[in-house]
Amino acid sequence: MKSISRRSVISQGALALPLASAAQGPPAEPKRKTKVIVAGGHPGDPEYACGGIAARYSAAGHDVAFLYLNKGEPNGAVRTAEAEKACEILGARPLWAGQLDGKAIVDSEHYESFQKIIAAEKPDVLFTHWPVDNHRDHRAISMLSYDAWLRLGKHFEFYYFEVSDGEDTLMFSPSHYVDITAVELRKRAACYAHASQTPERYYPLQDEVARFRGVESGHTRAEAFIRHVWSEGKLLL
Image 1 (cartoon, rainbow, N blue to C red):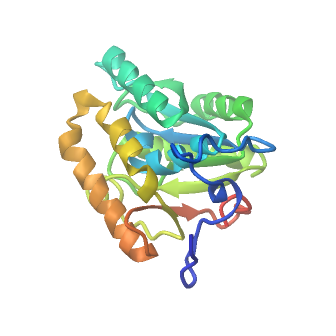
Image 2 (image 1 turned 90 degrees about the vertical axis):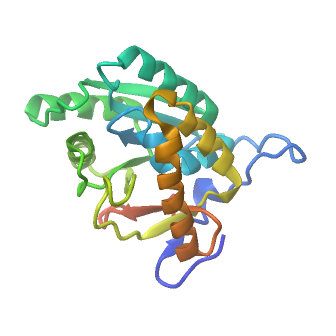
């Protein structure tokens, strides 16, 4: 990857490791696995927002988990199965925060229960929704994630992601970009695994975002993130 002016492209740490290919065989096992959590409101949110970076991490041998706030009720059984399939495609593990779709609660009890999930995972980096978002579940898990990061001493890196810009995410100005060109097909397959959620409508919208972020960062497609100013950024800078 190449750097671009003041906005850095991720080029070191986990993401600097080569992707697997048929010619190269599997990537070398890293000395220490990076533990990654992508926290999203619903099944599908982590895949659409971070499917590319998740594919890169898993291809490099790292531990990736998708933490869903809810199971997409009232079709929880269907959407859980779709999420499990999507995670398998991306090499991720599904985790569940146990809340209900459209009925997110942000209070002391739920702050504490969410913090316990994060603490048990001991992540090195946490990605979550940008808090200026039209969906209340997205805003809820953003706040729960932020509070967990603060209360756990800011000992892991913290990034915000975007999803369905203009329809969900608003006022998003990236600080970092990741080239996802080589893993776009895996991301697409993971998103289309959520067959009940009309991916033929939503994936093209998210792909427009990826193409635009690619134009900004000098790639065919990219995912963009905002690093919290208090996050060290050792893995991604």
